[in-house]
Length: 287
Image (cartoon, rainbow, N blue to C red; front, top):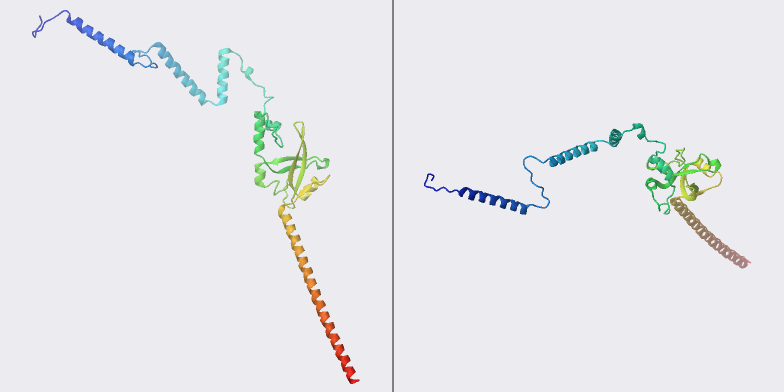
């Protein structure tokens, strides 16, 4: 019998313990029902060893990735080589590459360049051909630059103009010979250029602008076709038309003047005949 008029019982503690255990089971069941399929299990205050190891691996991988990204290609390559030698053994001399077969972009373009690209050439395109075609598309194909150093042997070299030459006017406003820069007395020529390319013989019509001396070199063996501008042709046509009109005007004026002269002469003859008749009449009267 305790104070405050209450009764003590031996079963009261057991009842409280049963209620708390029921609450715990209910909370666990509720947690299981509310748990999502992708949700991770809850751990206690101290992390599990496996979780700690995973976190450390992630941090190390992140740091390695950051260092690799910060390096350039050469530093990354040397690091991988050093790591390989450190783990598997060997010498750095074994990793030295031979530079005999190295090619630059210019070498690739020279090997695969074409003066004119056809549809057949674009059938099987490798990366080398694509690079050469990209360079070809940047060239200006209106006028050519010529190499006339072997003109006596009837051998000529032609190539298309580059952007710098177009801006400076080389080949159009200046002589198209590679070794000449004259800009007076230029003439346009059309040349049938025959050449051998990748073991195949081809022909192409090419336009050139050359000075008088270089034109003589071009036509040393036989004369090429000269291209005259349309303006000059129109001028010559107009000049011929004007001259024909002037001639027709002059001829018509001459004919009119001749007719007038004939009219004057006939009137003079008629007047003279009348005078003669009058004189004869007078003479007959006095007789």
